[in-house]
Length: 297
Image (tube, rainbow, N blue to C red; front, side):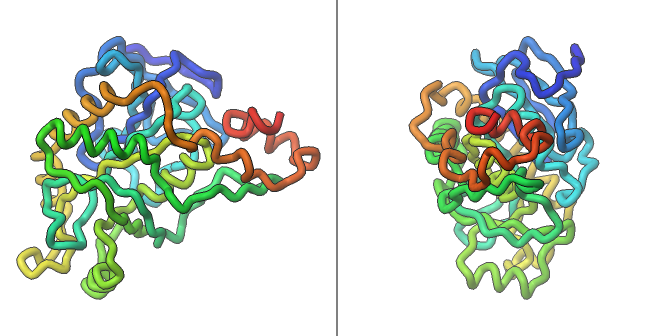
C-alpha cells in the first residue's frame, strides 16, 4: 500500500467519503489503493485516509476510532476528520456507526437511516467557526435526503432490514446509559442512541458536505427486560455478524448514487456567514480556506 503525505490541496479527487465506526475499520473491494496522511489546521485525523476505486468510483475511507479501535468518542478529532475529507475533494459522506435500540421494533442486526439527531454531548468542539468569524448554519434537517434515500434503498436491495428514518440521540460516553437515562430516552420518543454522529453531521453541514448515516443496531441498550445490560463484547459480537451486510450496503450505495446532487447541502454557508468579510482575520481565512474559500478569500 502506497503512503503519501498531503496538505489541504486536493488529491485524486474522491467524491464519496466513508467513515467507518465500531466494527468497520477497513473497506473491502477497494482497488488502486493509496493511503494518505492528511495535514489539517485542526491536527491529525483519526487515521490515515485510504482512497481507492469502489464500484468504479473513487472513495475515501476513514476509520473513525483508528485501526484497532484506539480512540474514545470524546477523543475523536472530528474537525480534522471532516476537514481532511473535504480537502481531498469529497462532497458526500456516508457514516457507519454502532447504536443501541430504544424501541422494541428496532431489533439488533437491523439498520436505521437516521434523519434527526438530539445532541447530549458536552465535551466537544462541534464547529469550525470562531476566532473572528461567526456562522450559523441551518440544521433543522441534519442529514442529506438524497444520500439517506440511497442508503435505505441499498439496504433493501441487499436484503437487510432497514428503517428509513428515526431519531438518533448522541450521548457523550464512553459509559453506556443508566437505566433511568434509557427510560427517559424512550419516553421522549428517541429511536437509537450512539456517541458520534451528531458531531460529524454538524461539521459536515458547515463544510457543505452531504451527510448520511447507517446506524447498525447492536443491542437494546439496558431497558429491555430480556437484555438487562449492555457489554462491549456483546456489541462487538453483533457487529462482527453484520459487518458483511454493511460492506454490501456500502458497495450498493456507492454504485447507485448519481453524480448529480438534488439537495442543498453544498450551499449551507450561502446565508450563514454573519461577520463582515473585511473584519475576518487573515489567519482565520487561511485556516478555513477549504470551507469558506468560495465565499471569503
